[in-house]
Image (cartoon, rainbow, N blue to C red; front, top):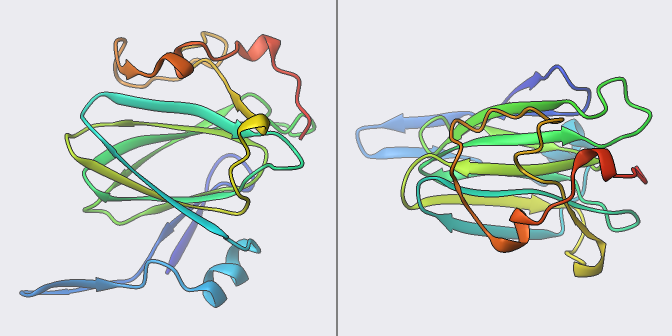
Amino acid sequence: MQIENTKIQGLKIISPKVFGDERGYFMESYNHEKWFEVLNTLFIQDNESLSSSNVLRGLHFQNPPHSQAKLVRVVRGSVWDIAVDLRKESPTYGQHVKVFLSGENKKQFFIPEGFAHGFIALEDDTVFSYKCSQYYHPHAEGILLWNDPDLAIDWGTHEPLVSERDRKGMKFSSFRSDF
């Protein structure tokens, strides 16, 4: 596997080895021993979503003590995946990284605790999979407004399909970090 650090400390792009031939391909999408050595994170829950093109999910996070690290990937289709730094002592607080993930490129994106996360599906029938380091706790969930001008995220569209819950996310200027 190949590891690429991003401009924000802690965020990593992982490219697993893919073995392909005329029959298809094989890859090790997760190996606890190898990934733990690189990420120092124990994952305890897997989630998966199916989205149509232009569906935006996010920007979600779990507040401490239930904050989650995530290892995300696309099984089928493609997304722009976004992570926003919520760590108040970080020099990149409020900044984000945008990564293209697809079923074709097989890349994975590691997002440690202390980040809001979201993605926009670029194709119909996009299957998004992610591992989490903590169980989901509804009372600990936070949502930042996906189109907050203070975050200045270029999602590639101005009119995505967004849930009512995500449409009511808080502005970054109102957010008070516990990370």
